[in-house]
Length: 166
Image (cartoon, rainbow, N blue to C red):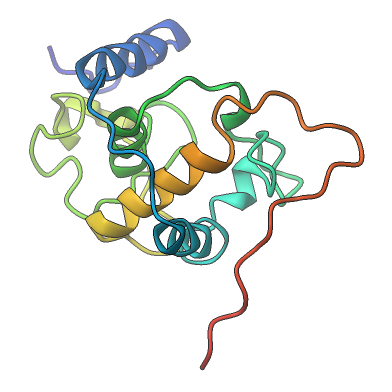
């Protein structure tokens, strides 16, 4: 059923995320290597700009004070679900899609751009990511933030990657 012109409710958004999560149970690839995590950190802080909404600590308090994203520290998402959300965004929210061809067919939640209508996520402000980059940033988020609970007062922030050499 096309969603064009319709608003996707919070419960429908949660349902989409839950359904994708159920499809992905048990399909994670752990643990990521140190090199993969380093590359994922670079994407999180630089190329993807994830910290602008999700914060340096992944707690949903964006480094850009105007933005707030999902709190990864309280998440129980698996890798396949995380990859789907990064690739496709979340319809009806500010979470953009990072895979260039999202919504050109029904790879994202079974919806095309026409199906999603005005609820289609926006393209990223930064740049689209290659599938390997999406996988690397998902590994970084899962290893660094997911399931870690609240940030302890005075806790150090995770190390950010060094500036890229030019």
